[in-house]
Image 1 (cartoon, each protein chain N blue to C red):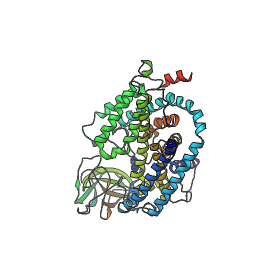
Image 2 (image 1 turned 90 degrees about the vertical axis):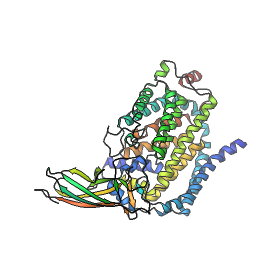
Image 3 (image 1 turned 90 degrees about the horizontal axis):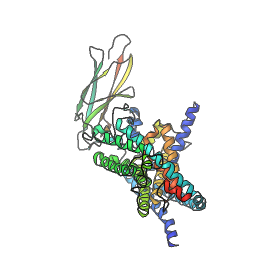
Image 4 (image 1 turned 60 degrees about the vertical axis):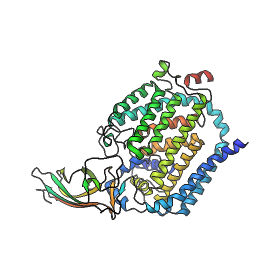
Length: 154
Length: 354
């Protein structure tokens, strides 16, 4: 009899205890943590926020070469499973909404581009590929490359 | 709001609705890679929905969850006689089919992971060997290349059904290595590989295995009392894994889950995405808690099998991402809450039921 009562109460107690503790704990946690940490790496506020700018040029072979100028950020080739919140890592290069390359150095060749306007975005990433978040959000920059049908120019 | 243009789209949207509403096991860490760069930019600016920061709403949701759990447990008691009648047949099937599905699922998953055939979204096939799952790229942990031949070796032995119980123990060791090498990120996967390993130790190779042919199938069978303890431990581990995923990746990162739902173009049926995300999170927590409590094992296992299948289809992922869970959940669904006290494998099962 006792055992039967216990076997009825135990699962309800487990579920109730778990749900109640989460209902108490989650709101305060969520209020202080907005961006999902599975995707973003928030930099400490006491560090200077990195900055990035982007320029593009065409080399003699017709390929487009991007130059990333950064401040308070260091490019490294090493990636790790779980990075510390430091302003080091690499940049993801996105062309018209599609990731085309990862830049582990400030200069990267993205090859030829077809005629038309292309939106090129660089987003700074940590060593574990999570996007770095500074005081103002994502650390990114964007340029538009206009490739004419005859000849190539910015 | 939602337009369904083709029959395929209709099936897709219906599938994701079922999978997402019932359970969200598939929304693990790796699905963050499904998001496009533009979606990630938008996600960075997305505020946490108010219902995930409200004590009142989450408190009410907890009360509703408790009431639903009590109702489910009441139904379980009512259908107990039917379940008891079917028990011998189901448990025979558990030992006949379950180990084969579990062995082959794990073998394929390990072999593909070791050879880079199971890459995460956006990574080219056969370029990045991983440990067990797409996220755990071995290139991130220099010096651990040994895990490639080790995983291939385990896969071959699992596929052949040779030294199965020993391989189960080795797989637990591999999970331990994963935790040591990849750290806390591997916590999302550790319980769901340790559990299949424990189940392998319990059920052995099953039929259609070299262990049967050379007479190893009953060797190293744990004693009955230990078997029940391991069985409960397996339920607690897998349930704990689901609770962990629900809390760490959904309840405390709801904007990511919502972005994944929007990416999958899930129909809302008049509900907002935050509400759907909250329902998914609650259902996953309750399912995990029931597994921990050792109750409603069969229905919860069936729900998990259905959900991971549907979500794999609609999110365009290979079902192999969850091959570790299919066999485990199948054995759970068939064997139920407790293992038979005096039967350790299909051979003895046939003798008893003959």
